[in-house]
Length: 254
Length: 265
Image 1: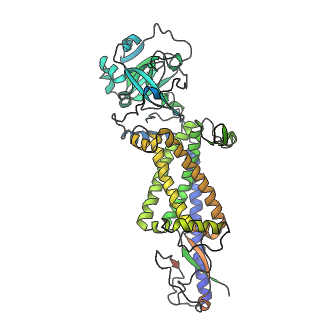
Image 2: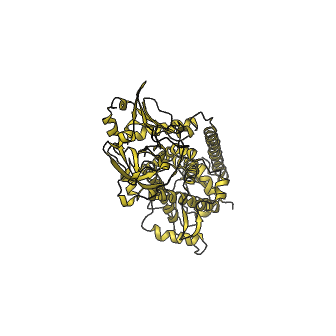
Image 3: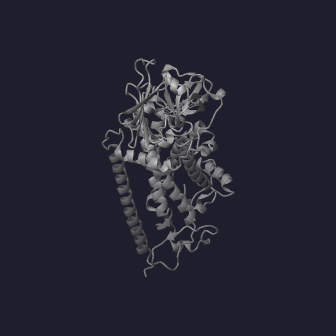
């Protein structure tokens, strides 16, 4: 056992050097690996989903996880008429180019292949009217308390005996010109606050808010609240979705 | 006489991993959060029509290539949130189980002492209060950053699922206020980062490298000389700092010799 001061010093010195070398080597490898992994993800070729496939997988996994938190009993907070803004913000006019011949407009409901139901605005107005006043949330990050009325989607389903169709996983909606389209999971469609909406602030929908009929679905971001509905259909596969194709999450559930 | 060196164990391996994993993950969260924030960049500091600071100036957006990348921001944010969450959770569990929390949690003296530390750092006061691994200001700062992390997760979930977690959203003061809190916490991280990095630079290499190697190197007066100096018992009440000497040195250990200078920033 050496008590010599110099040898002790050397040994501690060696320990310091050895541990420093090992630690910094691992540290540098960690930095290199992290950087390489990040840029591999960042530069991953995007397929038609508009986003890196790894991130698309993450978004879909998040959907699976957070669908467990979804409950029909969870409703968007209800507000009073006085809370609603007089002129709701207009955001997005995809699918609303040109004028629509409102006299001949019908919502086409594809019940089964080759079996289409045509529904007029008067047909929908004859059904019980439901009003929803809620904090409309845009995916951009703003929100506004807005007031809408129309037919509860689940009431519409019941009235037109479309229960077999709603056993499918998704509903798809398309504008008459097919320029804008959304796909929505069935539980969200059947939520109590989801409306086929024809009124805003107690008056018929303005043209720029989707006259004659739009979707109001408080459990989703605004991107799913399609204006000027042309076609409604049902599917077990995810229907094409305009913004999901631009790299956004498909589910966008709130 | 040349001073001898000894190894003072400082940061456990786990803490070092948590620290260096958190740094890039938080950076990615802030960057992707900025891409999201841009789409509705309404916050400013000011009153009436007077704006002191606009969040954020166009020059910053242009420099960081921010505009029109909301979907990219959301995709990265909602992927890396899991790493931020898991790393933070493991860190908190580790500090609790290992007992490291005792060195970290502020005690009843910390708030008064933190002020003295600040005065010392600003060269207004000569001496700093005695400390263990962290000084009082560090204890407060490092605990605050953990609480802030939890706050980001809570407010983040409140914005992410404001209807399914409606109670949480209400707890955060509603959707819009939760977004303000989430944003403010992020500004807090940036300020913390600036302060932290400047303090680390001021503290010097020995302190910095300890976050990589785990130990600090301390120079001390050799035992022959030190023997004449009255020796204090090893740091008494709380967890003693581990001192690694040459493994074979069993007798005339200088472990109890107090450090001649304050090793901490």
